[in-house]
Length: 310
Image (tube, rainbow, N blue to C red; front, side, top):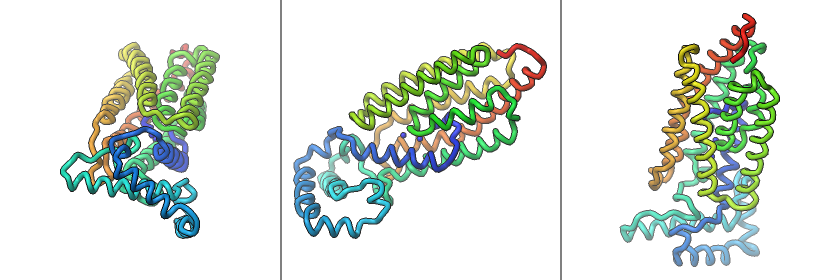
């Protein structure tokens, strides 16, 4: 799912990341109450048998919108989508709670997006990132020690949303606390983080999109990120007047992440807790980049005065 602390370099990359997450979610093999139901299973079997072979399959492929074909929606996927709503209707008619299907709540599909609210929120996050990155580049001189770290490394870490965001933040914290005096250390940490990120994405993509594992991994590196930044803020609270911006950002991000623990059927089949979380993080971009600008200018002035960098 796309991320709060990452200085995104383009809206296009954020949109592609959103599509990738949506497609990976669509192919999950997790079993839930809805897809265990005999009525759902029988519906899918009948639909596939009737519509996904021979002339009917060719007819489906010829009438399918190009954007659906390009994003990997198959005839079987369409059967699952239609049968999902058939099952939901039966549950509601009997007064039962709406079930999940394949590890997800049912969402009303819009174009190729199975979770349109989350996709829109990711796009807005990308726009906020782009806007503030442009402001950063226009405000901070290229001579600042943190300039190239912020504008270049984000190119490598802006593809898998939440995990990339947290790992990027850890790298940035490493550069800020150790790398300015020991650039070799931050470089090695950067390599380790990229390898960890690559392994994480590869497992979720090619082995199993395990929501439990993904949540546990993000929670673990999230705690490392939170504690490291808060320690830095505490150590510099007397010398850096803008330290509170960084502390507030990391507290807000981890606090807002609790929204992910909420679990309810999407309102109007569009807005769920995940989408609300994405939307709530948009304002945090502006505070985070305000901190980055203040800190980068501080480092530049410190370097000009010949003072040893912190």
